[in-house]
Length: 504
Length: 102
Picture 1 (tube, rainbow over the protein chains, first blue to last red):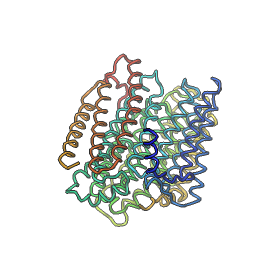
Picture 2 (cartoon, chains in turn cyan, orange):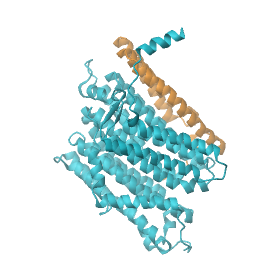
Picture 3 (cartoon, rainbow over the protein chains, first blue to last red):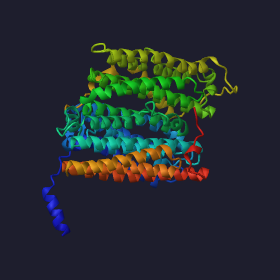
Picture 4 (spheres, helix red, strand yellow):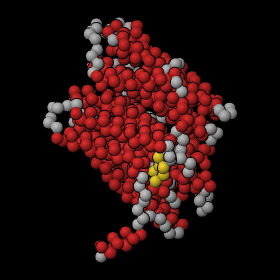
């Protein structure tokens, strides 16, 4: 009976063509995360430093097939279009891998010196990274949902990694509850989108969303589905009013995890938003545009205003991250008139944001090793005993504020360009003014930290130099080189223009 | 499946969704919040299966299976986090979990 069933299934089942080269980055990373677990199992306790090396090498090894795919240049589409390799996915996968490599560098000393389960930490980090790689390639609701959960569930655990610390618990539970609630609402929206289109492929949904399915008036159902799905990802990118988890989670989580959440996880949310808005919902920019307009304006304004009165540097970076998410949402408000420009602007901004924000978190980690505090007041007089670090932190802060010739300036510029071209629209101009005003507000709190470092006296008079471990020095060097290079060259804008979608 | 039957399932899904959202917003006990989230996910599953039957395609059922499997993983992690909070505080009241503000 069973054999008969199997036979009947086998005779009707066509094996999908699997392009091993196209899936190589994911396969290499999957292999690496298994190796990480095994290495942790078979190395004696106390021999630290092996597992992070393996994780780092695994990430770099996954970069190789991404590069060969980029050199090959051919767009690949698998599983009926549910999973693709195109310029967009390759650029974003390369960014996720590089950002995760920097996060491994940031974690090495932090995890080894604290009382943390080392093997599991890197295993979960690589799992989340795998989810991000899949997210960049997914063109299907089911694939996107699985990718989202694959990157979220390990992140919930990483956020609550400090088990015995009450703030660590709080960070974990807030992130978890907000995250699952958001993904549940998003799923409800996805079920409605499946309902109107009868398919989970973005290309099919785009047809149904633009023209209806010919079975009566489905406009309200489509609108509801689109709004629910977008709101689900608005939680992920910590857009106001769905940002409430971000500051508490960032403060309570281990700082390298905070860097990971602030950069990679947020970028994954934007990757999903870009794919949904520009491929699946492109026919309904009358819903998407105004929603993104309101979200962007609220997110940057509220994020900046609350960041002004923060005294803890991690919380300040959390609210600054909220505000930066607002800047990144702004181009999505004009997808109706300038969809290519919006895509290019968001990708460019993501690349630059990753470099400068990871750099800022790296310096925070280095300084916290000496001061044992995240209060901005404890940064007083940093220039007197760590002039090099002070210059680097100033570079990252001014880049975040958008001062030329650093990367953040170019990021703001592409947002303005996307909002004001190809022709001026009322919505685009007003949003550009809001972006401009917010850039000025943001300068105040970034400059406040710089003032502490350069002008104020050392709070406890302790002027012993800061010892910088090799891995943190490497992370900070990589970040500063990229931050400056993105500012003075057109590398980021070039990659942003290059990151096109496979035509559906 | 005809339209009338589909509407009944969608109505059930919508009611479950609303109860779930109300539960997440109103309940302060972490375990009850987790249960409310499960209600929303079940509303999703009902929708997916009903739409799948309506279109006569297997995609909806496959999607529902993915939702069920991943929801199980999610709740596993969630209960572990709630257990940690109970160990450190002897309470799972979410209003008490508020050390960080501002």
